[in-house]
Each structure stands twice: as structure tokens, then as C-alpha cells.
Length: 318
Image (tube, rainbow, N blue to C red; front, side):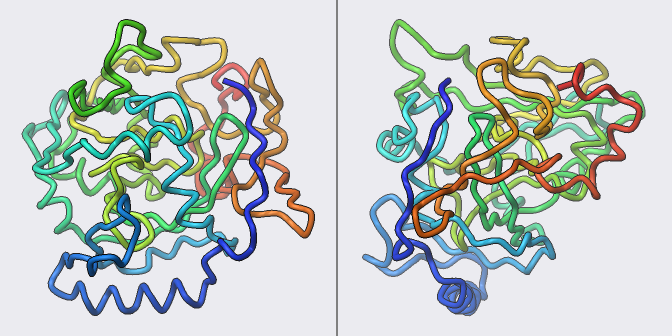
């Protein structure tokens, strides 16, 4: 992967905070009974999605939000193609409902948890920085719930030390999974240490910008771990397994010298092919469109998560 230098985003495309907050208040009223469909024509075809009611989660870096259009049109989701615009352009045939996640492994109560049950959890809006390993970043208002809420339902055993995740495989609906030459082995798999998974910052997201997740952003449920590089945020999850051993992860299997299991944002540990000291903020920048800024250790969440790695060599455990 090459380092991407994004074009400047005109200020006219950035959603003013006051307008977003007003729209969010209106959506809360409209969604008082749970989910409410957006009015026809209210959004573009790829974003005519149900609204979600969510309480403020208390996490907000106080930075300008990335424009919604950029969040939903520029991302990595290789199941739909390797281009940044492929997920938005090629995910229209993907059907994220009905949906459930199988949770098994070292738990007392294995079983399937349906999307409706997850949507009934206490949903929160969490405004998090998102840092891609490719050195671009965003600020996204996710809607979701702590992963620990779901894990508590299945009662992890004392022997569980890791949490493994698996993405859906539907070649008939995901064109990136079809053809003779595949960019990745399927299914996409990821993993966390159990203490990382149980950390309050770690969430399963079911929405963004006040609406359910678009297909291209990982519908209907994806992982968000804001102090790690974005490829750890596995999308369209169908299985979660608690294990005693460190689980395999897709990019680590593919290129272990480039993508470690932990993948913590660390400006002092460069990717072998580019520096991680700086990042390009999508939708940010000044008068001349300069979006570059210093990368923060743990993506700025060090006060909350640094203790998880006390005594570890973060250059070896990258």
C-alpha cells in the first residue's frame, strides 16, 4: 500500500457543528420509538438509512468532524474492492439484514446474538479519532456500545485471554471476494487481547453520523478500537471467539514484518515503507489545504490505554 496524500476538502463540504447538532436533536425526536426511516430523498442513494437514537457517550476530542461524505466514500473494505471508492460504489447488493453474531469459545454461554438485541443495548455516540496505517486520519461520530457489554452476556471463562473476530464471506454480494486473484484470504480475521476488548474505549459500532452503518462502512456491526490502526476495526462481523492463544489476524499473516498483532498507533515505529510520525487529516487543513499534523501516541488515547502495555517493548510488539 502506498501512502496517500488526500486532496484538500473545501470548507463548504464540511458539516457545521451547529447544523449537525440540530439534525441530531431532530433525529432523536423522530427515533423516540427506536428506529425511524429517513424521509425519501433526504440523503443520497447510498445513505438513505434508518436513524438511530443514541446518548452522548462522553468521548469527544474536540476536533472538527470529518465530512460525512468523506467518511462514507473514502475507506478500505477489500471485500468490495481495493480502491478507496470501491466500497461505496460496489456494496449496493450487500444485504446486512437479518444478521447475528455467533459468540463461542471459552465462554459459559455460547450462542448467537441478533442485531435486534444489539440495537436494544444502550447506544452511545462516541466521537473518536480514526488513524489508518496508511497515514491518513478522520474524526468520526460513531454510534455503538462497549464490546464488554456483549462479552459479559456470554460470561468469559477464566482461561480466556484473547478475542478473535471473523467477517462474513458472501462472494455473491461482495465483488471483492470474487475472481481468480484475491487480494486477501477470506474470511478477514482480527483479534484483541481480552483486556483490550474489555476496555471502555472499545466499541462495536452499529452507526455513524446519527444513522445505521452504511454497507461500505461495515454494516451492520463493526469493531472500533480508537488507539489502534484502522485495519484492526474489522467490519461486518459474524463470529467472535474467545481463546487462550493469540489468534491469527489477516494482515499479520500476510505481511508480519509490516503489520503486527497489536497495531497500536505509534509515531516512533514506522511502517517499513513510510513514516508514521505525521498523518494527513481528511477534511482538515488550513487556507492552502495542508492537512498534515503530528501523529499522537496511541492516537491521543494514551492516558486511557498506556497502562495496558506497561513493561512491553512496543517496538517488538508493534
